[in-house]
Image (cartoon, rainbow, N blue to C red; front, side):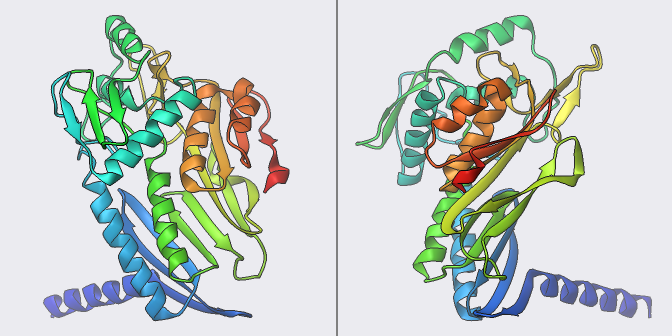
Length: 337
């Protein structure tokens, strides 16, 4: 009897899980559906106005793409590229995804004047900020050496030949500043090619949307308050019928406290100081695509609130909501969306 009850409970849980991952409701211009899954080290939710067959096919394509995409990264940290087991001076052939990612990383490093650095992966490891690692504060000597390394790019990319020459022994290329957004954009291309105009794709808190929401208006999305993470700080309106994306960056969820000094250290490192970025509690960016929104949110967080307006001006059509460590939250160019 106990075994029968156990199996019955398990069956009910499975049925409940299936019900939770497939939701359907009606609006004035057709039927909406939501599919949930898990990939890219996080949860994925696709809400769209589409028939069951189309949405299921597109969702399967996205899941397959994300599964293949994660193979380009190491297992101890999200979006840390695997390709650089080469020795310094060695040339490595890249596939099309790796080449596209490194090309964007190189442009991001130039655009941000080094605030976003693809070579920060080695510094992340010195801090022990990898899955299964032990967080720690590196010595002053280690931090100084990393600051010196991060004054330049640790590779030479030949985008035409899709190859890269490694300039640092044991290089770890970390692309967490934008690589989730890059993948979201590739997934959105699959959605739009399937003829789906109205949709919202959410991957671990980063979003891309198109068309209208089920109420036939622009998508309205809440922003978590970094001072009180269980509440919303504000609600932003996106797109108004045009493709649009939103991403947030903050150090209030992933951090450790140094037992010797009581100082809090989080996972978003400033390459110029080799330490956790300071001055901002949370930054949310809106841009025309998810890759730019992802990059902009991280850049805003690293640059600090005093440079926020300058940062936003570098990406046309973008806007932001910034919560500084001291002072009141503020919007930048909200009228553009």
